[in-house]
Amino acid sequence: MLSAVRSRLGSRILVLMALVLVATSLVFLAIFAPIYQREIVGERKAVATKLAAMLEITLQNAMLKRDIEGLRDIVERMGQSRNVDLVMILDPKGEVRFSSDARTLGRKLDIARLCPGCTGKADAGDADAAFTRNEREAEVLRSVGAVKNREQCVGCHGSTQDNPVNGLLVIDYTAADITNRTGLLAASLAGAGLLTVLGALAAMWLALRRFVLRPVGALAQAAQAFAQGDFSARVGAGVGRDDELADLGRGFDDMAGRLQETITRLRGREAFQQALIDAVPDGVRVIDSDYRVVAANAAFCRQTGLDLHEALGAPCHMSSHGRAEPCIPTIVVCPLTALAERAGPVKCSHEHICRKPGGEPERVAVEVVADAFVDADGRRYVVESIRDLSRQVQFSQEQRLSEIGQLAAGVAHEIHNPLASVRLGLKAIDRSFQAKGVDPDIAEYMALVDAEIDRCLESTERLMRMSRLPDERGALVELGRSARDAAALLRYEAEQKAISVSVDIDDAARIIASEGEIGMVFVNLIQNAMHAMTQGGRVAISGGLNGEGDVVVRVADTGSGISPEHLLKIFHPFWSWRADGSTGSGLGLAICQSIVNRWDGAIEVASEVGRGATFTLRFPHADKKIGQEWG
Image 1 (cartoon, helix red, strand yellow):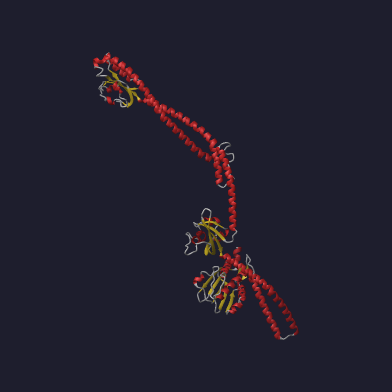
Image 2: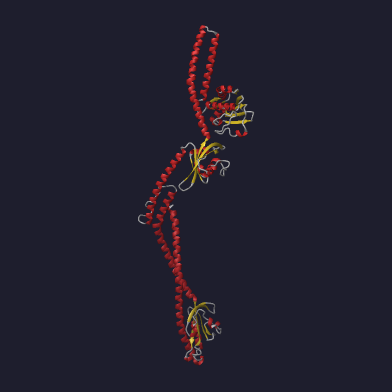
């Protein structure tokens, strides 16, 4: 990390400095190269002016002597001089009279355009120079000077007033020399600038690396470690001791320490809050205005079969209803919509989806109580308390079993034990009567009383068997005996309503379950059947093994039957409807379904209005269940 920071930051700074230095060098080169070139040109112009003056004297001397050959020789030799491209002498009308290049002799030149860059003072007898392209198509520094008419020349050229100029002296110096010297200067300046740039970059790099990159790298490394969750990361002495970066490092360490303390406290509070809502037995979730679940407890996760991260990452309608879109408020009571329209709390019943690993999702009846609150930032949230009604059914079932157990214990204490004592006394009296030869009628009465006492004792034993608290592992249960016990306990109520109860279950119908819970299933089903027969009728309990090795038991009645719309609700907790008009808790069939499912069974119902109903129970046979557990 530290080397990466040095590489990125150092490369950027180094490139930036190199660009600045190179640009500065180019600017200086662009400034000084033209200045140097102008100095060379000025120097050449001065030399050209002096040379023109000297040549003018020589030419005047040659013309006075009428030494035409000597004049031609002077022009040719001047044309062969170093850095001279062309020398010409023109008459006042612009005709080339003498030239170092014979090809230009006799040509008529436009005096006004002879030297476009000159100032035009040549006509007055002064020399001037400028860069141009000459008659040989060469880039030259052209010097144009006027050969003045003097008193000695008036004989041939007329008066000085009418003809102030006898001709023009044109000397072309090659521009390559000036260009080469300028290029050499530019190359020298560029080389010196490059060396300067390299030296400056090396010095700056060393300084940057020592005083900037290392401290910044240490800061970056500590900051990244802190951002990744290592709140113990500190800069320490990695940024030096006595400069601004050292102060920055110490400030970072102080800030990191305070932030670590704050984060630790916040995490502790979050853990406490999560543990607090996890301790709530009902499901709890908090939903924002965008239908997103922002908090949930362990009970809600158990209700939906999601882990906490999945619950928090999904919209409320997806996590609880399996819907991709929000619930339709006109069909299902949506707490968010309801609380937006009126003040809470809102109470409603829903069916939530419970996802089980490796199985099909199940629908669970729940009761939802919701209310809204607004936080300090003005954001609105809805808190839902979700009660799993099947859990409430289980609690009600356990409570009923506990109550029956207490009742059975009281019956055993108040009835069973005294009856047993009475029976012992009757046995002693009977033996005494038999020894004395009592009246046969008395003996018959004594036998009748003994049978009735046996019947009472059997009833108390049935009640005690039904009141046994369930064992988590289960026990071997004979469904025939459990059904007969339930029918016997309800015999008096059935006789009062002119209802007959018959039990025909194969002795081989044995399952692994809780005898008390299975007895409660039969009691509930028989009682529901009796509520459906207001004018008397018959309840037939039959069953045995099917071809798949399962136990199937049917509880059929001849009552009023169940309508199709009610068939969809009969297993819902707290839903109740009875043909005789009596009220119930709505938990009986829900408890039956919970018990049957607990012991790997299934319960179904088939009914036709006016022709009764048949409840079918299916359980794996005890042998099959044991084989599955040991297989």
